[in-house]
Length: 147
Image 1: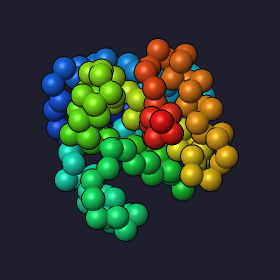
Image 2 (image 1 turned 180 degrees about the vertical axis):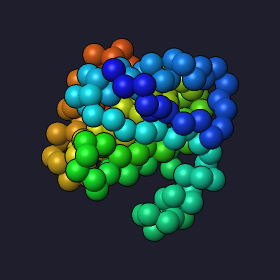
Image 3 (image 1 turned 60 degrees about the horizontal axis):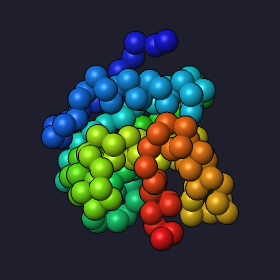
C-alpha cells in the first residue's frame, strides 16, 4: 500500500477526523479504483467557487469537483470537496459532515474513473448505489437528485 498522501486538508470541519478520512480514501482507492492513486482536497466554498468558475465556467460554489489526470502514469486525478456544502447537505439529509464528505469523495472518484451521470444512461448511478451500499453509506448524490 502506498504511503502517498491521498487527502489534503485546506480547512477544518466539525467532527472530521483526518486519519479516518485518509483511511476511507485508502479503502476506496484499493477497492473502487483498483489501487490507482488520486488526491482529494478538502477545502472551502470560495475555493470550489473559483475552481468551478475557472474550469467549468460556472460562477458559484459546488459540493465536489473532479479533475481527471491527463497523464498515463496511472494517477486518476484530483477531487475537491467543499466543507461548507458537505455540512449543509449533511444537515439536510440527516447525517454528519464526515459521512457527507465520504459520499462526495466516492462520487468524485467515480467521475475520475470515467463515469458521467449526465450522459451514461444510469451507469454511474448504478455504480454509486452498489459502492455506497458496500461501503455502508447513505443515499448518494445521484439518488438524491432523482427524488
